[in-house]
Each structure stands twice: as C-alpha cells, then as structure tokens.
Amino acid sequence: MGITSVRLKPEIETPLENLSKELDRSKSYLINQAIQEFLERRSNEEKQWKETLEAIESVRSGRVIDETEVNNWLNSWGTDKELEPPAV
Image (cartoon, helix red, strand yellow):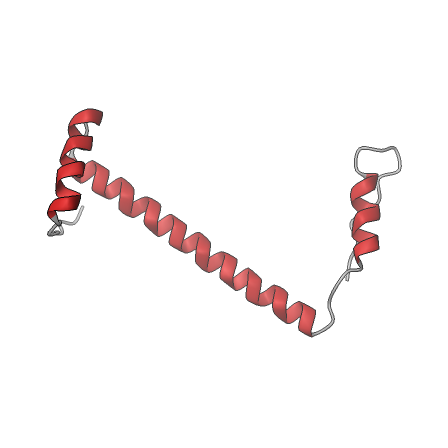
C-alpha cells in the first residue's frame, strides 16, 4: 500500500477527527473510503457521459425506435402476450 501525504484545511481536519472518533475508525480509513467513493462516482459519470454521447449520435443518425412501439412493449410486460423488445 502506498503512502501519500495530504494537507487538510482546518475546516476538513476537525470534522474528520470528530467523525473518526465517532465511528471508531482511523482518519486514514475514512479518507480512503472517501477517495474510493469519489473515484467510483467519477467513473460512473464518465460512463454516463459516454452513453449520452452515443445516444445523441444514434438520434442524429436516425437509429431510433418509435415511442408507440416502446409503449406497446412496456404495456405487454407481465401479460401472456409479452412482446419482444423493439429493435432499430
């Protein structure tokens, strides 16, 4: 495991110290958890952005499914005559 020094502002250090005591966890543990959650959130945001750009490109190129087809498919869910998902 690597070691990294971080200078924390007092407005972060004090609440971190208090939370560390409250949860009976080390500050290092809490910082690692926070960074891990940040990195996961950032990765998800990048993935969503990529999917958004792909969706925009699909619309621009005319690869769309009619709303009526989607609604018919959704309305068939849970029935004896469930439809196959609509395709482009």
